[in-house]
Image (cartoon, rainbow, N blue to C red; front, side, top):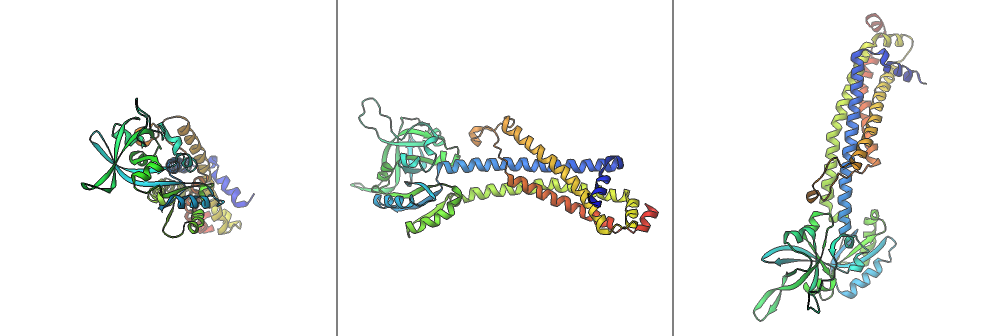
Length: 409
């Protein structure tokens, strides 16, 4: 064992410390423990929320979206070529448009999405989000054919008091020419189902119908306004987008899921970063306790330091003794903090201690996801603060004059 480490361990022995020094050591360890545990637990919860939101958004969207008007022949050709790329799992045509839905005197603006149900099932998890119904409009007694089907997000359906089987009218922003002049195009739809993606913005604004009916309603003549793409690995989104660009050519916008939701992801990342900075102050305060403990130790062991110097210990060795002690206190706090954080995360994930209102958060319990990267960042940052806290007391102790230390210690 190194000489400096041996002395540091002896100094840390509680039997050789004064009561006040012992208390400050315990406070230092406890402070680091609380700070590390609070930081890791908070980051685990924040990561859980981020992951949950990300999964819900991607579940309702796709990994890559291509925007641009295409005829049926064009989008079929493009999809065939895109699906031949090794990074791509599947692709499907879609239509995005706007409209106003009216029912019993109430009106709301919606985003209308046209899709091919079977193909869409390969590019996202939208079909598994059905609360009830399907893309087939139910027939009423005496009917031989039903109006066009319309699937609504649950929040949108609730706000208009709509149920499966109700008829609504969609008003298109485009106009059609009649004998009375230009009038907005209107089409009757029947609510065929409701979808709950778990993401409020989608469930509050989105309406879904088949590609055929969306194309007819928006006067696209069996065309599409985009292509949804699912990748084999979502981490290859940027790389895949570059490979898709030559296939699509000019006149098309290619956006990854991160670009489509950049503002949301940036806000979540900023929130997590700010929480990291704020809670790091707890560890900073704990490291100051470690510094005060080492300064007190240097005062108590002044004579010992003088004897060590007289016996040939260099100033560098004295510095190492105090730095080792600071790191040992920090290590004890960090290890206890990580263990405490794991216990807290397990309790939060297992027992529904904190209940969330499901109608607001779309969650009934706090999501927890422990990230190894977050843990390593907290541990590394804590070690750095503990090291810096030990530097000043170590330098101060190394500058002690051996003769004066022995005489006055």
